[in-house]
Amino acid sequence: MENSGTLTLAAAPIGRAEDASARLRTALADADIIAAEDTRRLRRLAADLDVSPTGRVVSYYDVNERARAVELLDELRAGHDVLVVTDAGLPGVSDPGYRLVTAAVEAEVPVTVLPGPSAVTTALVISGLPSDRFCFEGFLPRKAGERAARLRALAGEARTMVFFEAPHRLAATLAAMATALGSDRRGAVCRELTKTYEEVRRGPLGELAEWAADGVRGEITLVVAGAPERVGEVDLAELAAEVERRVGDGVQRKQAIGDVAREHGVPKRELYDAVVARKADH
Image 1 (cartoon, one colour):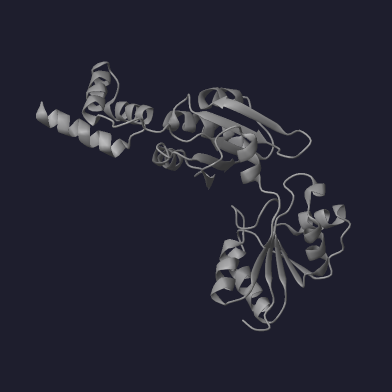
Image 2: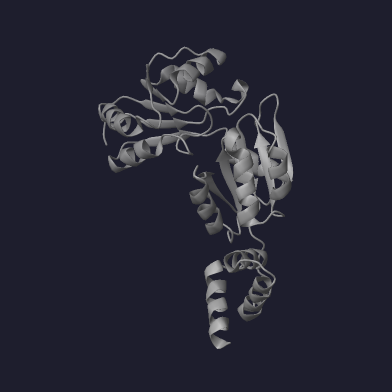
């Protein structure tokens, strides 16, 4: 769109203000409008960077994101430059930004990014887990049943997985992960990244869940190893027989199917079908 403003999404430090880029300092000083997830934290960051914003500062967070995106798009169409800054990291990554970017792209408004700190990639590279292929899952559902269902769906995911989590839900989430993915699956709890009390706790999910049971504070990013790759062809008939053996030992069939599927890296649906077929044949 001719004569429109430019939408800029800027990465903010995830811990230390000195991690801010020179481009972020310039953008904060020059933007016509700054859309901030928390205006108080934005002004504190600007003060730490010795920057005095000259543009209008407005709030832009999850509750008002939809309505504010419409207003900001109107400002962009009117030729005003808009800078989007969240509390930490990149806008749009589990933070407001996606709706505005989508609207700007559809309106042919220029969009650019000031790259910088990201808790996702910072946790990934410090975790000690494979980083050549990974996926970001954001926050898991808060309700136990929905969380368990999401994790069961991820049990066969071969890529390293990165999650965000609130500290007061960490122990429950790690316990749910240990149940759905296996207590011996490797993980890393990354706490307070880049801050004074940064801590990275690595180990099997079962051990991490026990450690977190006493309570953990701070900003949390979780990194979990992907499912082990299948080696050669898997004989579903043999796995179905293993399920029946465990059922004979007193394990509930649903649990036995889940455990065997997870241990051998096969989809539960395929194993369930094989169990049903075996029962029909016998």
